[in-house]
Length: 354
Image (cartoon, rainbow, N blue to C red; front, top):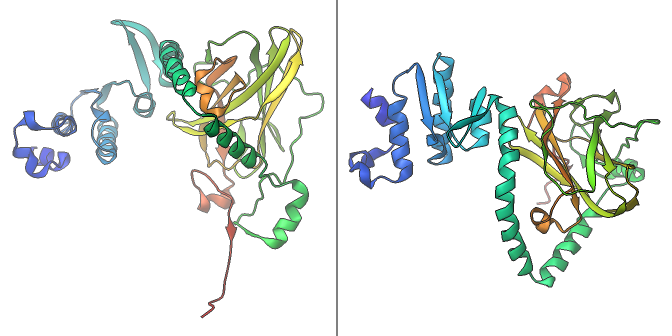
């Protein structure tokens, strides 16, 4: 057992030094190796997985998973929502020594993040506002110019055939924005489809605009199971709570099953005037979807328009965090190229000039 502890913690010659001289990471390594050297019926882990470098964290997770598979019950005490989602089936949220919520991990994590956002955002907003006030006009102009330049670098559909003849694209071949999806005629919806475990998690926002509808559309129709490398359109319905002139920025985020953000997409400015009770439809097309196969959650947000670097310091109209489920699949014929993402590329082949 002693040999197993020594090998696992990998402290080398430092192991013979007094424990009080260890760094926090070294202490965590030794304590975790000692606690998991046997196969207990119940293992209590208190934040120790957060200590040490990435290699040791991965090594510790592997040992924990092995213990769980052998029949051990693990009680993880942690503020890391990613670790909670990764390792726990059921979660108990303690607040001031009392159980505030208990249930399936994603449901409790979403409720905890929604609750935590209030006090944390107040501190963050004050810091962001102070930072923003000290930024120079030159840096803002530079950012806006860069943002405009990138927004114009799109490939129009009418150039697709010409590009195919001039450029060696990746295989399987696809050209971003080559295909076009349109909203089906007669479509209108105020239903939030495909809710994630725990339902819709709506964070507090200012009065004005609220998200009341969500759907996913592909060339095969509506549904939340889509194919990678095929176009997909997210359709959002927003209701106007009071008559006003609006200037908005919309956001969409996709997180994996462990809560890690895969992508975060923001719109350019949308200016419009609207009366109370009217609706506005917003579409976000991934054309094509370049995210790899897996199960994901989708979040949506509506903000008063502001430059992206100030986004966290302005109030929002609405935010639905990790509120919808999305499954991405890959055709069986393409199983050999499975990956986390599929990036468009241009290939070149050249003869030796020597």
